[in-house]
Length: 234
Image 1 (cartoon, rainbow, N blue to C red):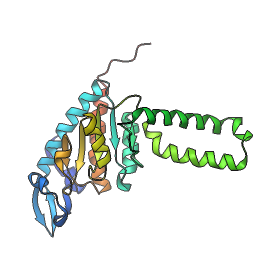
Image 2 (image 1 turned 30 degrees about the vertical axis):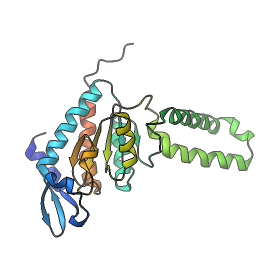
Image 3 (image 1 turned 180 degrees about the vertical axis):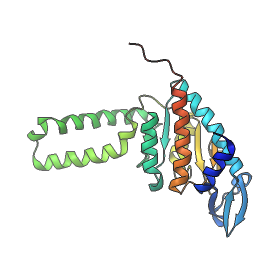
Image 4 (image 1 turned 120 degrees about the horizontal axis):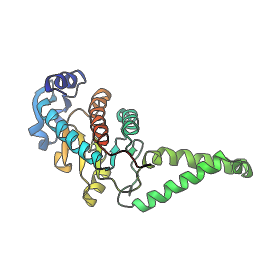
Protein backbone atom coordinates (compact mmCIF):
# COMPACT_ATOMS: atom_id res chain seq x y z
CA UNK A 1 0.00 0.00 0.00
CA UNK A 2 2.12 2.91 -1.26
CA UNK A 3 1.33 6.37 0.07
CA UNK A 4 0.66 8.03 -3.35
CA UNK A 5 -1.83 5.32 -4.33
CA UNK A 6 -3.53 5.54 -0.94
CA UNK A 7 -3.68 9.35 -1.13
CA UNK A 8 -5.51 9.17 -4.48
CA UNK A 9 -7.95 6.63 -3.06
CA UNK A 10 -8.65 8.86 -0.05
CA UNK A 11 -9.28 11.92 -2.24
CA UNK A 12 -11.59 10.00 -4.58
CA UNK A 13 -13.59 8.69 -1.62
CA UNK A 14 -13.95 12.20 -0.15
CA UNK A 15 -12.24 11.23 3.11
CA UNK A 16 -10.85 14.78 3.40
CA UNK A 17 -14.26 16.49 3.69
CA UNK A 18 -14.95 17.37 7.32
CA UNK A 19 -18.03 18.98 8.84
CA UNK A 20 -19.09 22.61 8.63
CA UNK A 21 -16.54 24.72 10.48
CA UNK A 22 -19.27 25.95 12.85
CA UNK A 23 -19.65 22.37 14.17
CA UNK A 24 -15.99 21.62 14.79
CA UNK A 25 -14.33 20.43 17.97
CA UNK A 26 -11.24 22.63 18.57
CA UNK A 27 -9.29 19.55 19.69
CA UNK A 28 -9.35 18.40 16.04
CA UNK A 29 -7.24 21.44 15.03
CA UNK A 30 -4.02 19.36 14.51
CA UNK A 31 -5.86 17.20 11.94
CA UNK A 32 -7.35 20.04 9.86
CA UNK A 33 -5.57 21.26 6.73
CA UNK A 34 -7.77 24.23 5.74
CA UNK A 35 -11.27 25.70 5.62
CA UNK A 36 -13.04 25.92 2.26
CA UNK A 37 -16.61 27.13 1.66
CA UNK A 38 -17.31 26.93 5.42
CA UNK A 39 -16.23 23.26 5.44
CA UNK A 40 -13.14 21.99 7.23
CA UNK A 41 -10.72 20.06 5.02
CA UNK A 42 -8.96 17.22 6.85
CA UNK A 43 -5.19 16.84 6.49
CA UNK A 44 -4.88 13.52 4.62
CA UNK A 45 -1.28 13.08 5.78
CA UNK A 46 -2.73 12.76 9.28
CA UNK A 47 -5.35 10.33 7.95
CA UNK A 48 -2.64 8.14 6.38
CA UNK A 49 -0.60 8.28 9.60
CA UNK A 50 -3.60 7.19 11.69
CA UNK A 51 -4.59 4.51 9.19
CA UNK A 52 -1.11 2.99 9.08
CA UNK A 53 -0.88 3.01 12.88
CA UNK A 54 -4.32 1.40 13.14
CA UNK A 55 -3.48 -1.25 10.51
CA UNK A 56 -0.31 -2.24 12.35
CA UNK A 57 -2.09 -2.42 15.71
CA UNK A 58 -5.16 -4.34 14.48
CA UNK A 59 -2.97 -6.77 12.56
CA UNK A 60 -1.06 -7.50 15.79
CA UNK A 61 -4.30 -7.99 17.75
CA UNK A 62 -5.57 -10.46 15.13
CA UNK A 63 -2.19 -12.23 15.00
CA UNK A 64 -2.52 -12.89 18.73
CA UNK A 65 -6.03 -14.37 18.30
CA UNK A 66 -7.55 -11.19 19.73
CA UNK A 67 -11.11 -10.05 19.18
CA UNK A 68 -11.88 -6.66 17.61
CA UNK A 69 -15.46 -5.47 18.10
CA UNK A 70 -16.42 -3.33 15.08
CA UNK A 71 -19.05 -0.69 15.89
CA UNK A 72 -20.97 1.58 13.52
CA UNK A 73 -24.72 2.08 13.87
CA UNK A 74 -25.26 5.08 11.57
CA UNK A 75 -27.17 4.21 8.40
CA UNK A 76 -24.19 4.96 6.13
CA UNK A 77 -21.99 2.46 8.00
CA UNK A 78 -24.31 -0.51 8.55
CA UNK A 79 -23.73 -2.50 5.35
CA UNK A 80 -19.97 -1.99 5.36
CA UNK A 81 -19.64 -2.90 9.05
CA UNK A 82 -21.61 -6.13 8.62
CA UNK A 83 -19.84 -7.19 5.43
CA UNK A 84 -16.29 -6.44 6.55
CA UNK A 85 -16.74 -7.84 10.07
CA UNK A 86 -18.01 -11.12 8.61
CA UNK A 87 -15.18 -11.15 6.06
CA UNK A 88 -12.49 -10.87 8.72
CA UNK A 89 -14.37 -12.99 11.28
CA UNK A 90 -14.83 -10.31 13.95
CA UNK A 91 -17.91 -9.45 16.08
CA UNK A 92 -19.88 -6.32 15.22
CA UNK A 93 -22.66 -3.94 16.29
CA UNK A 94 -24.40 -2.30 13.32
CA UNK A 95 -27.96 -1.62 14.50
CA UNK A 96 -28.02 -0.37 18.09
CA UNK A 97 -25.51 -0.35 20.93
CA UNK A 98 -27.09 -2.12 23.88
CA UNK A 99 -26.12 -0.54 27.19
CA UNK A 100 -23.86 -2.94 29.06
CA UNK A 101 -22.57 -4.74 25.96
CA UNK A 102 -19.12 -4.56 27.56
CA UNK A 103 -19.71 -3.58 31.18
CA UNK A 104 -22.50 -6.14 31.69
CA UNK A 105 -21.18 -8.78 29.30
CA UNK A 106 -22.57 -11.74 31.28
CA UNK A 107 -26.13 -10.50 30.68
CA UNK A 108 -25.43 -10.10 26.96
CA UNK A 109 -24.16 -13.69 26.80
CA UNK A 110 -27.34 -14.93 28.52
CA UNK A 111 -29.46 -13.04 25.97
CA UNK A 112 -27.49 -14.67 23.16
CA UNK A 113 -28.32 -18.05 24.70
CA UNK A 114 -31.98 -17.04 24.69
CA UNK A 115 -31.69 -16.01 21.01
CA UNK A 116 -30.35 -19.49 20.19
CA UNK A 117 -33.25 -21.08 22.12
CA UNK A 118 -35.73 -19.00 20.11
CA UNK A 119 -34.06 -20.15 16.89
CA UNK A 120 -34.38 -23.78 17.96
CA UNK A 121 -38.09 -23.34 18.71
CA UNK A 122 -38.75 -21.58 15.38
CA UNK A 123 -36.91 -24.20 13.33
CA UNK A 124 -38.51 -27.23 15.02
CA UNK A 125 -41.99 -28.69 15.20
CA UNK A 126 -42.28 -27.22 18.68
CA UNK A 127 -43.45 -23.90 17.20
CA UNK A 128 -46.72 -25.59 16.12
CA UNK A 129 -47.58 -26.26 19.77
CA UNK A 130 -47.90 -22.51 20.42
CA UNK A 131 -51.00 -20.46 19.73
CA UNK A 132 -50.98 -18.11 16.72
CA UNK A 133 -50.75 -15.15 19.08
CA UNK A 134 -47.78 -16.67 20.92
CA UNK A 135 -46.05 -17.57 17.64
CA UNK A 136 -46.40 -13.96 16.52
CA UNK A 137 -44.97 -12.73 19.82
CA UNK A 138 -42.01 -15.15 19.60
CA UNK A 139 -41.30 -14.09 16.01
CA UNK A 140 -41.34 -10.40 16.97
CA UNK A 141 -39.02 -11.06 19.93
CA UNK A 142 -36.71 -13.10 17.70
CA UNK A 143 -36.46 -10.43 14.99
CA UNK A 144 -35.61 -7.72 17.54
CA UNK A 145 -33.02 -9.87 19.33
CA UNK A 146 -31.48 -11.01 16.06
CA UNK A 147 -31.09 -7.41 14.88
CA UNK A 148 -29.42 -6.34 18.14
CA UNK A 149 -27.35 -9.41 18.98
CA UNK A 150 -26.54 -11.37 15.83
CA UNK A 151 -23.19 -9.64 15.32
CA UNK A 152 -22.06 -10.52 18.85
CA UNK A 153 -22.39 -14.31 18.49
CA UNK A 154 -18.65 -14.76 17.95
CA UNK A 155 -17.76 -12.59 20.95
CA UNK A 156 -17.19 -15.36 23.50
CA UNK A 157 -15.26 -12.98 25.76
CA UNK A 158 -14.59 -9.26 26.08
CA UNK A 159 -12.77 -7.88 23.01
CA UNK A 160 -9.16 -6.74 23.03
CA UNK A 161 -10.10 -3.63 21.05
CA UNK A 162 -13.01 -1.62 19.57
CA UNK A 163 -12.98 -0.28 16.00
CA UNK A 164 -15.52 2.54 15.79
CA UNK A 165 -17.07 4.67 13.05
CA UNK A 166 -17.95 8.08 14.54
CA UNK A 167 -17.07 8.02 18.27
CA UNK A 168 -19.40 10.98 18.86
CA UNK A 169 -22.42 8.93 17.81
CA UNK A 170 -21.05 5.82 19.52
CA UNK A 171 -20.23 7.66 22.76
CA UNK A 172 -21.78 4.92 24.90
CA UNK A 173 -19.52 2.29 23.35
CA UNK A 174 -16.49 4.56 23.85
CA UNK A 175 -17.49 5.19 27.46
CA UNK A 176 -17.81 1.47 28.26
CA UNK A 177 -14.48 0.68 26.57
CA UNK A 178 -12.70 3.45 28.50
CA UNK A 179 -14.23 2.23 31.76
CA UNK A 180 -12.80 -1.25 31.18
CA UNK A 181 -9.48 -0.09 29.73
CA UNK A 182 -10.20 -1.54 26.28
CA UNK A 183 -8.29 0.33 23.52
CA UNK A 184 -10.26 2.10 20.79
CA UNK A 185 -9.50 2.81 17.12
CA UNK A 186 -11.87 5.24 15.39
CA UNK A 187 -12.69 6.94 12.10
CA UNK A 188 -13.24 10.39 13.54
CA UNK A 189 -14.60 13.55 11.91
CA UNK A 190 -13.96 17.20 12.76
CA UNK A 191 -16.87 17.41 15.24
CA UNK A 192 -15.47 14.77 17.65
CA UNK A 193 -12.97 14.72 20.53
CA UNK A 194 -9.83 12.79 19.50
CA UNK A 195 -8.74 12.52 23.15
CA UNK A 196 -11.60 10.07 23.71
CA UNK A 197 -9.99 7.39 21.51
CA UNK A 198 -6.57 5.75 21.50
CA UNK A 199 -5.88 5.68 17.74
CA UNK A 200 -7.81 8.39 15.84
CA UNK A 201 -8.07 8.15 12.04
CA UNK A 202 -9.22 11.64 10.99
CA UNK A 203 -11.66 11.41 8.10
CA UNK A 204 -15.19 11.82 6.82
CA UNK A 205 -17.41 9.54 8.91
CA UNK A 206 -20.66 10.36 7.06
CA UNK A 207 -19.79 9.27 3.52
CA UNK A 208 -20.47 5.64 2.58
CA UNK A 209 -17.40 5.59 0.30
CA UNK A 210 -15.14 7.05 2.99
CA UNK A 211 -16.34 4.57 5.63
CA UNK A 212 -16.03 1.70 3.17
CA UNK A 213 -12.46 2.58 2.19
CA UNK A 214 -11.19 2.90 5.77
CA UNK A 215 -13.00 -0.13 7.23
CA UNK A 216 -12.07 -2.36 4.28
CA UNK A 217 -8.37 -1.47 4.66
CA UNK A 218 -8.53 -2.24 8.38
CA UNK A 219 -10.35 -5.54 7.78
CA UNK A 220 -7.58 -6.45 5.32
CA UNK A 221 -5.02 -5.79 8.08
CA UNK A 222 -6.88 -8.08 10.49
CA UNK A 223 -7.00 -10.82 7.87
CA UNK A 224 -3.26 -10.40 7.30
CA UNK A 225 -2.71 -10.76 11.04
CA UNK A 226 -4.86 -13.87 11.20
CA UNK A 227 -2.95 -15.43 8.30
CA UNK A 228 0.13 -15.68 10.55
CA UNK A 229 -1.71 -17.85 13.08
CA UNK A 230 -0.75 -21.54 13.11
CA UNK A 231 -3.44 -23.83 11.62
CA UNK A 232 -5.81 -25.42 14.17
CA UNK A 233 -4.74 -28.86 15.37
CA UNK A 234 -6.65 -31.83 13.98
